Image (cartoon, rainbow, N blue to C red; front, side, top):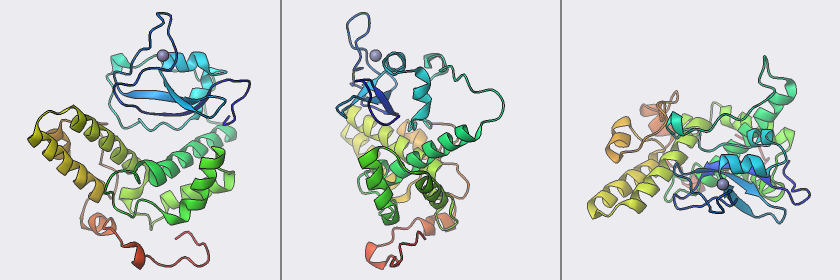
Length: 263
Ligand SMILES: [Zn+2]
């Protein structure tokens, strides 16, 4: 699934793209369409390069459309008008209980998504608090970058970290997805704004988000950001304990990890 074959396109992820991005596929009109909602499927060619595709174009490009269900989706906490959503991809196997293989596939996606959110997407937010990047995940993240996959044992390890009591609620998967989504939306608003005062206000919110890994409902409203109705409402992310747990720990005072232990 992660190796290109016969020059075909390999789906990598569903993700946000800049609003001026054009689809890599050429439609019947021979013109590239854009992404009015700023979301695209990212497909990899045989040479390893990644390009954005619209959903229909991605379906046409891959070996079978079900492959698009087997990539991590980083856009799940965005809000897209229902009328703008394409028809759901026929899953074929959505009846009844999930099989063991389907469960394993879903866990693999959840693990990759958490790994990439924590080590790459949220870690790359400017001035983000240093607790986001987790040194214990470095080897598996490097392996993922090399191979495009994580082994089954590493899937369990990553999910155990995400669920561990020692992992602050603001560093769990759903909240990191909210942080990433709000970061993308704030950057878009900053890029589109012509008002110095508004840009200063938005940058202030962005810095707050980077430091605290949350935004309040009133901050979201003041910025004009539309997100998932449950954005930043995950259990445990508010209150004094969450604030203390999410306080940045200087790297020098982090506990040593002599035996490669995770926690
Ligand atoms: Zn297209």
